[in-house]
Length: 204
Image (cartoon, rainbow, N blue to C red):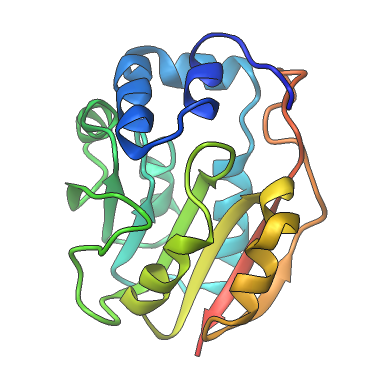
């Protein structure tokens, strides 16, 4: 596997949710600056897909794996008035809260039962989460459950994860593929980054 230095190495090397949370807690204060230096693309690509498939005014939206809230201020600019966020890391949630762009922020673990009602959200976006050492296809059923029929899900997925069973698991879920990008490198500034792809889905 490609080797990453510092914080990226810690999060990719995590083998349990508590390790992921601790790694992101330690990274929270410098995360935005470091990702900007690496030319981080997932948030912009995810929002571009959502803008093509989700009407303005749709609400509420869930940012699943919100991190420091990198996309927070963009939702309102694109016409979506109410966005909630969840993340495994209390430190990252604290940074997201400072941005003041989210209606609610909740600690939750993707891959476990989420604290939301069936069909609660008009859309779910999850960028940079389905990747090495983080979350796999086990999180899909809950994300589908909380998305209302006709709602949109936007996901970025590490290509190795996609080829390692994610695509097959997704085919079994109640959603139709609206759009899929070609593989792309999410962080051009980190030479060890391997390709990902992004998907837009419609919940049946």
